[in-house]
Length: 313
Ligand SMILES: Nc1ncnc2c1ncn2[C@@H]1O[C@H](COP(=O)(O)OP(=O)(O)O)[C@@H](O)[C@H]1O
Ligand SMILES: [Mg+2]
Image 1 (cartoon, rainbow, N blue to C red):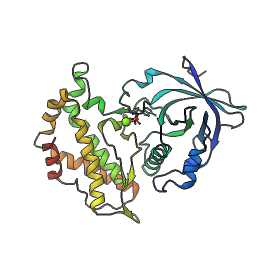
Image 2: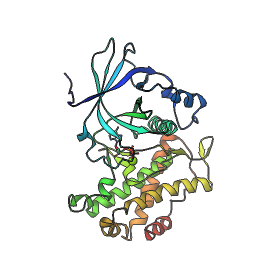
Image 3: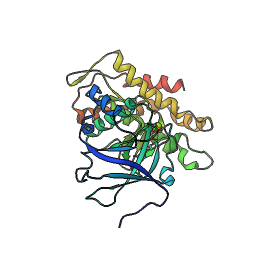
Image 4: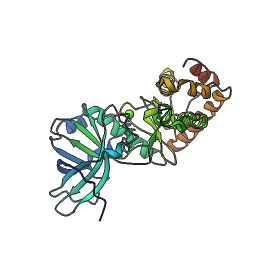
């Protein structure tokens, strides 16, 4: 017996297992065929990636979603109103296959495609899983496309630190916690840039960690750094994209005015810029080792970059 979440269940319609979604990657620009494929997904249908469901038999396949709001605790910073719960698959040959999932709606199919492609790309070139695992698409009756990913309860996003409720959870804003969070996020961005990828919306709420490593969330605006062969290009575009990620992160740390003084205390420590450069470089090195990309000198590899960033907050 597996856990069965109680609550009203919602049909996800007829389901099928398809091959083409496994190949969606940031490297291959979304092809015409992908756009046509997305447009033609019938409403009230769930399509699952064969790579993730090699065992399920597609005959009379049907999916059901049971929402569990508690799985959303600590995951409230969501523009798309991601829902969490259990997806149960039944087919002629398979009885009740459950997965905990996140269901994220997109109005524009292209955005879903990009998020899928970025998740796939990052998970395939890095050594460890760093992004949520896309399982499939659910097109609802209202025409929305929903990205289905495997739910991971241990992934905590950094709004839980920087945007914490100072009264409700005072521990979240301890100086050591804030310092480590900032250094870890910057190391994570270095790692991502070392993979040749920019996040595109690198706010604290979209950077996360599990108990082992940094995780990247909400990748619908991710893109590849300009490159030639196996080298990232040294040019203005590389500088613009990488510094924009770091700017977005630091800007987002100050969004809750009640917390600003605590965070500023940590950032204004004289040793912070040098620690940030080291963390960023450490991330870059790890990323480029895994991606085998050669990197140019990056604009954020200097203390003065971080000093002026912090001064401007
Ligand atoms: N598969 C998943 N497992 C666990 N948490 C998830 C999953 N997908 C999304 N979340 C969490 O839900 C929140 C919103 O997701 P996100 O992709 O950032 O959507 P939005 O674009 O709505 O902000 C984030 O805190 C993220 O960590
Ligand atoms: Mg988000």
